[in-house]
Length: 353
Ligand SMILES: [Mn+2]
Image 1 (cartoon, protein in one colour):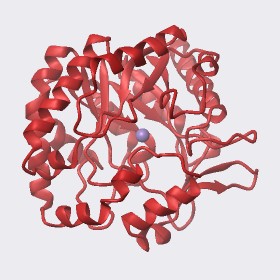
Image 2 (cartoon, rainbow, N blue to C red; image 1 turned 30 degrees about the vertical axis):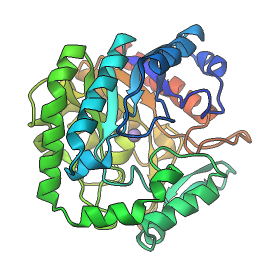
Image 3 (tube, rainbow, N blue to C red; image 1 turned 135 degrees about the horizontal axis):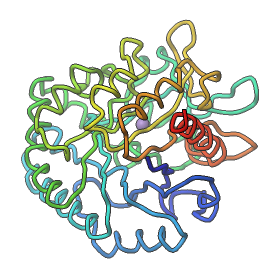
């Protein structure tokens, strides 16, 4: 198991790599090139520069999150082949610097949804909150505008202003395709890229839909055991895999997350581990990592990875904003750093038991 930390790049992340390096038991970062629009090739020089920046700071970078998929690919629109070719070129350039895993998602239009980015808890910490009523009474566009307001102008992954500007147009295009057509579009993409993933030795790891139920009438793919099975059946290659995100799958109480981890163990190169706290009405907020702070049994989750012989990458997922920190919602330094020491402690105890 290798523990890594999400970092958005020098221009986009207020946390310096020098601080990240001081987190105990950390192997490296998982990063991205935020300023390259979906559908374009990540130039080799930019990839090499990113790699140099991270390694010069004494850290490794073997996982990328995300290489976003252009809407034309997801919609099966004309032009998708060219965008898939660009995607494969990006994979090649990433393999040149030793990247081993690409986390991506196939969510239509919106990558994730919350009602509040900085919801204040009784202890004064601030965290992301999902109030179902607020989200259901929103449109993707109004959510984008609310995020822009709440985040104080920080560009959020998946909610870049240039994407939000086209939300109304894009959502109409999605309403014209069926859930089954959406599956076919995903299959088309997977069939095209997996042979190249194998060749470049990069494991593709799809991220589950967040939240795991349909929003705004948009299709959903990766939200439960059955659909994960269906998606992974597109190719039996180990290079066709899953990012196991406990916080995304776990939002649906029907999902037995430890059982899903055990079932798909050989196909999981990357894990996002976090806890969340359900309220009585089913709303939830993202809590600190320890079991006692939220609704998940984190020991059972980590044990499921450990007992399956997991040797991939783990990152703590979202954390709260604490100690007066401000920054990217869900991606402060302190709470995630504590998440790492907690998860590492659980792992060590399992190793030695
Ligand atoms: Mn996640």
